[in-house]
Length: 158
Image (cartoon, rainbow, N blue to C red; front, side, top):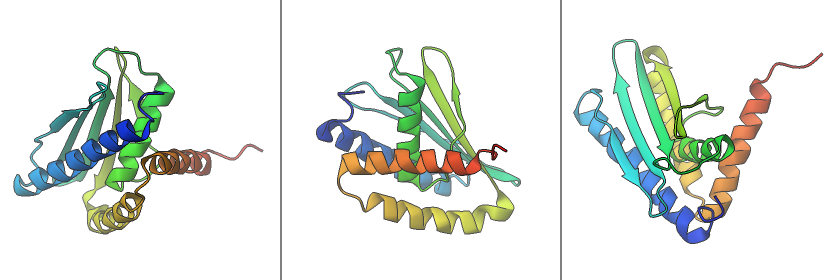
């Protein structure tokens, strides 16, 4: 993780995330919601797989993050998912599942009745989040948004 958070590597990671998000959204628009899915990998071996699919009931955004079998802790995976979430304009907090090797999965399920408003909100949030040009600051902001959303969603302790 220390290597990933250098300005050069974080810039590459953010660039690949943005490209993956934009390309998959374009593909899902022209394929009328049929799942296509795209993958990309950074020079450090961070593997990202992203799909958008939809039916009459919902739209699902599905992300997989791994290092192709190399070590990646849950905390590191969660930080990368939070960054992806910010870059896509998706809502925090994110439900993250850890699989084998380790591989991390996150999904956002959006009801069609909420989709139109959600898509507008996502575009606005994405533009705001992507306006931060310092990659390290963008990373810290994404993590802080995730932490704040988790705290807000947690039940109050009496």
